[in-house]
Amino acid sequence: MIRGPYRSISPAKVLKEVEYLTAGGVKEIVLVAQDSCLYGKDLDGNVDLADLCRLIARVDGVEWIRVMYAHPAHLSDDLMDRLFAIDKVCRYLDMPIQHISGKILKKMRRHSKPDRIKQIIKRLRNIDKSISLRTTLMVGFPGETDDDYKKLLDFVEQTEFDYLGAFCFSPEEKTEARDFSEVVDSQLIDERFELLIDVAERVASRRAMMQIGKKQKLLVDWLSADDSACYEARSYRQAPEIDGYYKICNGPNIHPGMFIEAVIKDIDRAEL
Image (cartoon, rainbow, N blue to C red):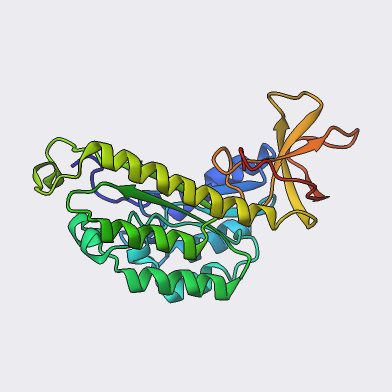
């Protein structure tokens, strides 16, 4: 009701925009959709997300392609394999799972099951053990028990997502969930949220610290807003604006849009 039907922009139109962006110096293309994995299902020509990325990779000037919001219900093994066989596709994936309890996923109508979600993550890390994973979770959905919540916490601890966003359930008008019984107490929802964030930040910090001492290819974005002597730059592990950045000391040959190699000296765990 809110989103309307899924509609794929034609490959020709996407490529035209990519060419326009690269002509202006853009090096990274970020693909965002309500569900990126469904791209092309409504188009003639048998083109899917991997096919689109392969076309984009051929455009002069494109260096990185980043996929956001890949729904696990539609992320097949074949799509993963073909997608990450493309050199210019960043070893990064934003895959919102919302929960890991089968009961809660079913009530949410997420059309993905815990075992399949775990299989996908295992396959992604088999493709590239250093792949960077982002997800989104919800706490406090009606009917979420202590056991459901513990499954979620344990899963986050074991999976070690690099980046994780979380939010609390809130009833929306004209949705089935608004009328569900077994409403979770608001104070308990807040407590679960805070604990989940604490666990996620601890895990993400541990993952980030592993980058110290490593040489990374970084894309220079712009001058730092809080330090004009530095530039902000990102590795393939970081989507723009949401996953943090590295500070690079100003140099005579550094400018936005260029790639540099740098050794990571330290991580600000508060900012990641």
